[in-house]
Length: 379
Image (cartoon, rainbow, N blue to C red; front, side, top):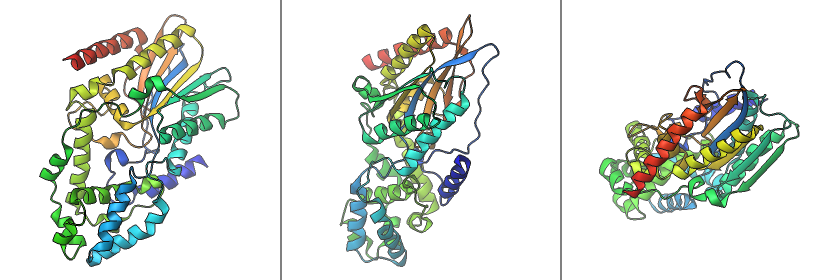
């Protein structure tokens, strides 16, 4: 049944133009690479950070501006078709902005099941699972759905979840250093052709509402439909040429690269408390020797700089493809031990981004990255 659902969702999400950055849905059919546990070692601990699952569009204001402009301006034939599709879909979406969608709930349950499938030797009855979340409802719901997925196999184990106030600065978006992304957008994207395709009087339409807000809202509306469990709308996407659509995707990549990647090292450095938390809790798990799983649920604006700070995965370039941080993206440190040593490997979206490494070596490297981050932020 799980395989049927994965195939169905993959088909649903594949229609239309290319994926849209951080609004992309998790690809459960992507090939995964995972080196087996070395001989004579057994997995005893997983430390995880997961982005919330698929959500509805971020703000109701995006719906409002689209409805306002489309309803007040005479439309071209294409504009009529776009507005018609918007009106048909809007009742299904209204009032849910920012919420975890049914797709997002399913994603988290599926990821929980796959984690158990990947590491059955860890998920025994004596395994203790602790989960924390930011206080944003879609993250809390993501945590609860993941825990529901762990419970569904019927085995008794200690499982708990809570909102962790002490980690909120790291689990939430954090103090991002913003650039003026609006001016960057306007200098690169020509809004006029979009208005000319949709409206009989493009000049009048531009005066109804902020054109930049309108164009972005239309892009976000189209991009978020799969996350809401709806089929892509190629006719709506024709408001943009293929070149404009690709540029919109790139500008989103540029924005998130500025906010969370090496284009602005201070934005990477700010995430050091999350890395410190990973290390401190791993030390405790290693010392205890007990089977444990530590789960954390937050946002892309923490996960991206966290991976950049580790210098692992796809976020080490100045400008990266932020579709690599889809809805429900995740990182996990997997720990294995024998009587003499402890090893760890890092996985991003369930695939290895490091080999098995002695924990002491990896820990030392992480501490040096924390020292760099603190120095960067003090400059």
